[in-house]
Length: 277
Image (cartoon, rainbow, N blue to C red; front, top):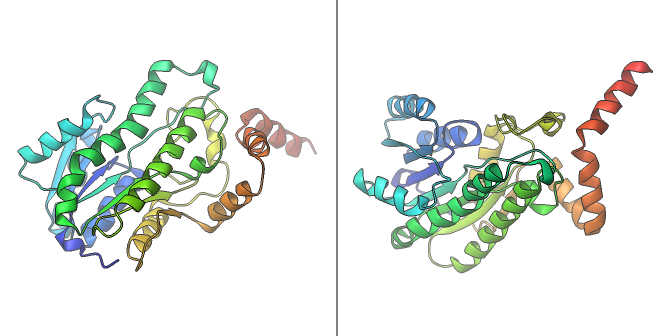
């Protein structure tokens, strides 16, 4: 796909840190105008100022909680009030909960589903009609390798990302030939603030070697720029091999394997045994 970044106005959610911030920087450097959406206004505003100064592009910053039940209509109105026409969309915002389901806060889980599932659907529905008329943009949904297998202690998160993956693949199929490209990018463990506030034991998610947000951006944009980008791209060779391996195992075996991988007690016992040897 030939991408004319300078003709794009990209609405990007979860833009204030991590993968979202790296995407904003990369797109601004390529000449795209941006609409940055995040909950933390204190981070969003200075970031927008810096991108304007450095790259001479238009950057609108909208502080907004994506758990709002009418997020699509509300953000469409906020964008229209600023006189902006969105040509591309990146649904990056998301968060997880690390706890056994029975111990998780139902209110937090409801907000997690709203941000991880409902917001991408509503935003895509709200902005797709104009994006189709522009016919040269893209929709990138940030899913996760967790979409490919169950994740005990993150049951809602992996289910939400499985939804995002399936949703993206369906959009890719429906949009073929329209000039609007859609796909999902699936990161694995990435060096971001993702585990902050997730719950006790969430450090197990960052115990191995991690990719950087910039790695994920390189993967996503390289895929976008392919001649015929497919519906999904997985970031990192290790993550790609992990997904392939999961497909060779039964659903039962996958679930049991991930239970061991995400068991903080098992990891603690392993560290203790190494110390006492």
